[in-house]
Image (cartoon, rainbow, N blue to C red; front, side, top):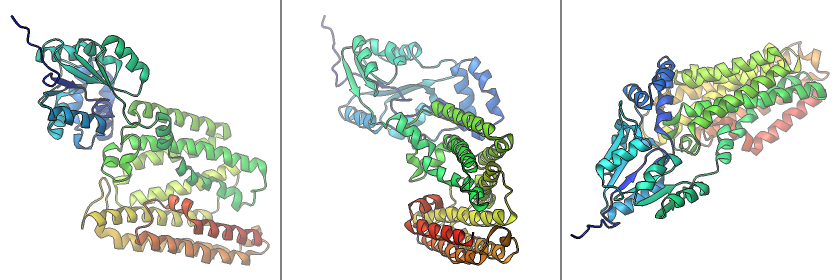
Length: 481
């Protein structure tokens, strides 16, 4: 009797989902989706987990849905599967993810002949996954593609092992288990580089507003005051990075729909969602410790800032106009916190100026987003925003009005008697008005032309004219002193 040998071209190929076919983990994505959509239900997560991951997955699948078309698929794995499919191989998607997600992925890609996923009674990981595969195919007559040490029990039994990993030590371990090993080295950026990118250090420039109080109170030569402001700058920067990471974690789907934001580390799957959450918490703790070391009042201002940021990320960013008013408030509270650092009281003039200017900048950000959407479609509502492209004329009017109000506030301040308490030559301050007016008018002109790139802060950092005008304004203030 002749033994029938299945050739490599006919041998079935089983593929893992999380970390292998996609860069992310669908369980973590489902948990994040639950926290965003049903915050109260999130308190049930520990109870569900105590009853096992299969039970947890079942409860999550009943409450949230993941858009599988937006998941960060590994292109190198997809290319491998397409080649194998073209050779006539049967390909099965076998994953610990819930079967509803596995089914959606299989139908979306159109590469799989079979698919298996977890249900309420079975969580297909490790030995459970191996048992499910062996029910489909004879022992040693299948190949398996995985990415972690949890797949070793399957690789030991598979005829051919394919590992998707950048960990060379894991590859060497696998060679000791299965000599028929193929390595797919994913083209992933280093986690350190991705983490630094997720922190968005370029956004720390907004926290330079903490130095405004020291500068406007003429304490810029006072070393203790400047060191306190620098201390506050570090605390706010750590807190801002914690908030940005948290925002990115809960904005995965929205970011993946965006032409530029889809390249952010979490949306692109370059960083683990779990590690991101833990690192965000660590940054927040460090920020609060830095703030408390300065003063309890400053720690309070930092806490208010973080609470405002969370309210924006989770709810108010979807509300018409409230979002831009809150964004303006986030700029203004930095100025107030800087006053706490410097030990000076921020005047109503200063708060009025920064509030009106910040509101104009926030509106410019929304206008540029709408303009970008309008280039793609005639009429569209920005995803998870309260604006439509038809709102652009009103936003343009509102933004320009607030820009000019900020100039008016400066003019009224110069005309007031308050200037004589702080300046020996207050008439020199009039030079500031045309400089600020030119800057905001130019900003809006470039916004209308679609050159703002959705972020006024980045515009100012990269814009040479902004630096020249800033130097001119500082010179005017020095002449007035």
